[in-house]
Image 1 (tube, one colour):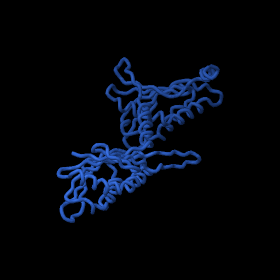
Image 2 (cartoon, rainbow, N blue to C red):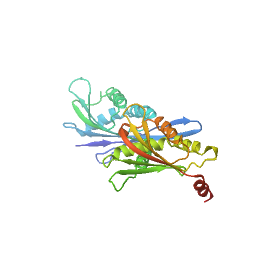
Image 3 (cartoon, one colour):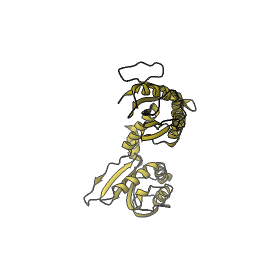
Image 4 (cartoon, rainbow, N blue to C red):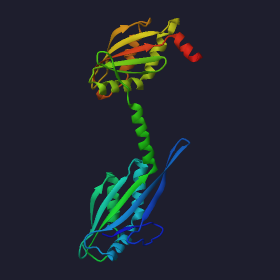
Length: 295
């Protein structure tokens, strides 16, 4: 099997291989004064199929490469809207005997983007194959990469790592996860097999930390020390608002449990959080915060 790979600015025969690496025009996204420039590249190669000689392969290369600019534009258009699109395609191009229309078969397509696939099919099917002696059978390999996709994948990987919730087991075998700030801490206790639920509740409370901090601030009004604990049982439905019930409270402000309940009900937890679970909220006292600030 012969293989051709080529560059857009020059053609040089290297044994039986030529290479094309085509940079797509940079895409820019404005956001206030911030600007991100992403560089995209399209790499194309052509392999001969059964019954396709070197001369036919060379002619097919000439015809297909004439559409490289259009392929580049297809990719630039798609990544301007969806910068994570990248991957590869292998397209079999068949020219039947006589004057039959060109046939394109997408034998492998890891890009899985309908708009890009349709655009490439549109342009390749309209290439001028008049110089090619029929029948001919080649495979066009396209590789799509861009720097924006690489950056987004790295950011998502870091976010996934940060989203991991550290859990331990207490003496009763229950799962325990803790989080919060210096002012408000929370301790989640779930069933021994409820890791997904504990993680989901932890993420929800972390996202709603502003409401919890406001409850501590309110508990410290009128010169009261906000220090103390509030344990709530959360009943989290798959749809609708969370229901809370106070199990224990040592905070001097009697309104603190209701405040926490309202703050929690303002947040929508993910479906994995559904069920009953206990959470203990700890408000730091004034002295503790003053000591921390002094340090």
